[in-house]
Length: 107
Image (cartoon, rainbow, N blue to C red; front, side, top):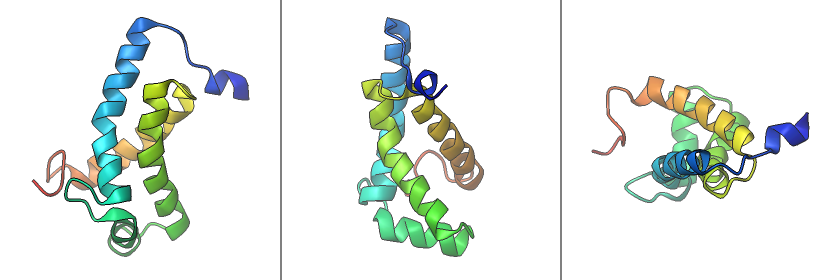
């Protein structure tokens, strides 16, 4: 079961999809985890998630780390299903909090 979750198919269409999705998600992770592209970095994002959104700190930290690592995993084909599951959860949450501001909050 765990092996199937981490398995990634050697399919050109799936590769293209993973690379494009990873490239789209990566700047968001860079903003939240590293403070690039006008983001607040790890500590600023953690404070926003815990203080403003009310997330528990361990879950907020896990979300930030997932935002940074899942795009790389998708693009490299490492644990594609697991990375995609993490990305789905993150983007569902992000869509609910960022919808009024667009793709990046600082634009």
